[in-house]
Image (cartoon, rainbow, N blue to C red; front, side):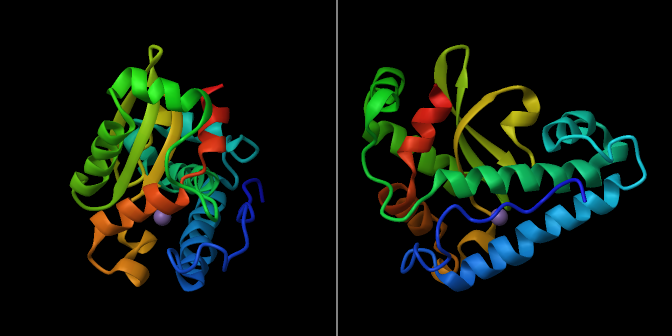
Length: 197
Ligand code: MN
């Protein structure tokens, strides 16, 4: 098996009451795990069997004959990245270089939050909202389904999963409340700072 499911970087009960252990049971143990299994099944016996996850994504991006592989491999990558973007007792105002960069590029942390949460709230259907670094400037992205700015050569700093499986058990249809909780209680700004470099 070339691609593995990474362990969660925090105990499964440590995000409660914001994200329940049950959500993580399904989200990590079933959904993320299924993307790993599907990716391994799709690369078995092909010239990508020994390739890295990143190379599999690059090799399948934009190739409609490899859409199934792209969707599963990108979802493996997106989820592994998402788990690192969150932590127990996270969220709130950032510190370090990302704080100065956000103020410089968005005007204020409040304006950044409004834009980031807005991207997540207005992504129609399943997808992701992102903070990326583009030509030295912070920008917000939203992508549908498995698509990821990483596949388009952009430097990814932060993401939030807005597929219903990420929040439905805890928030039902209240995606904006999940996004507010994400910003107030979950964001791992140390990881975002590390990505900014
Ligand atoms: Mn997900």
